[in-house]
Image (cartoon, rainbow, N blue to C red):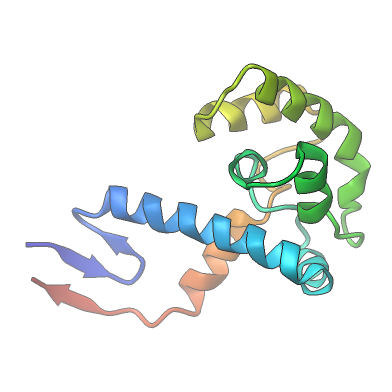
Length: 140
């Protein structure tokens, strides 16, 4: 059996992780296809990009292109101000072929001054989704 309530599950940790990965991939695609809307979302939420790991997870011609697509907001945070620092760190991550999301996040947060978990939008988007999702309970 499994008990599901709202956006959490007693036995669904791996499923939730997969859904979050899919969400980040869809957001990256959305950012690429709708750059004006993605910029507005970042400015509305006061954050930049999707997540520290999302830059490496997206198929893009280059890391620079992925960063430019994902970091476009200007107010209240100038997302492009960290572009050079982030590009250097992501280039090292790419050169070392690091693919573990947790390891990528640790490297980014430790090596880019002024970047914290609040910099990226994923948590704010998850919170918004959770806030506006209808909560339900089910026993299977």
